[in-house]
Length: 123
Length: 294
Image (tube, rainbow over all chains, first blue to last red; front, side, top):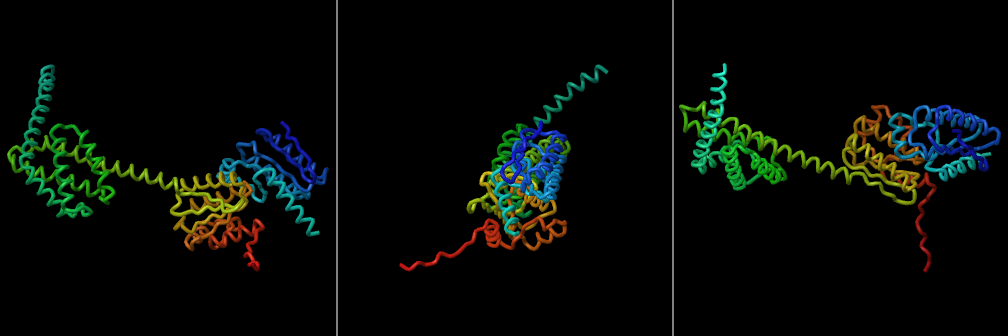
């Protein structure tokens, strides 16, 4: 099942609706990285609220997505990780290092606003 | 063949009967000499410096009760009443600080005192007396000791639960700032529970910053330190920053020895500093109210 990607101002928002296969995850990653260039986005939000498991492949794909989109000029933030999922992830050593995370979509938007404002202010 | 089997099956109940009869006789003898034997026993308890947490009068009162229960169990062979009594006794004496070795010690002393008295009465026939007396006496000693230990374990379990329940409050101090004061030893189970509570607290309070104060934690081993690091990382996945405060020198040393990456951990000296740091992260600044002229 493909994940819909919404464009909202400078940001791309992908809300995962159901458990994804490895293939879907890769497609999502590639689509987001491509659209970052297409829409000249400054930020990407991946909402994983509905996921009740996060395996190593998913964690690695999200981390790759974050690094790839950063190289293309957009900050990626993962939002909506459930407490139980977070606990299980750190126990498995999947800490999503270097990937910003936020509580929910609202927080994620606030984070990106802060980040991108700082960038423009620095110019 | 058939004959021996019949004889044997006849002998066995006979032997059992004679044992029961003998035991009854022995108990009658011990009842007769109750006062004297009880005093002898109490004296030996004092000599062996057992039950020092109790006054001599209390020891004597308990000794009387134990003596009577002991004889009853010996006579009837039923240990149910004794089990109940042992549980009651344990409930009373455990809070007084009576140790396991003392309880086992006094029961064994009583067993010896009684055996000696019986030996004095039946010197010729002593092995038969022992055959009857010892299994019953051992079973009683066993029952009392097990009863005591079980009661003690029950109390320990109860206390562990109580500690667990009140051990990890997650306190909101101001909007989106939580404090997690940790006091006492952290074991892996508590560390796990603490993490779960904190993560739930972060979600409910939509916390951005958590100050985890471990001033009250005396020591920490590698397992628990790793648990704390995991807590910090899990909180980050929920979008909250954790500031750890109040690390004692020993804990700091443990963390360095096990090679925890302190770059990931946000640490500040004390709780006050931690809250100030949290305010800074959240963009607050505390300024005194200027006194306005009246």
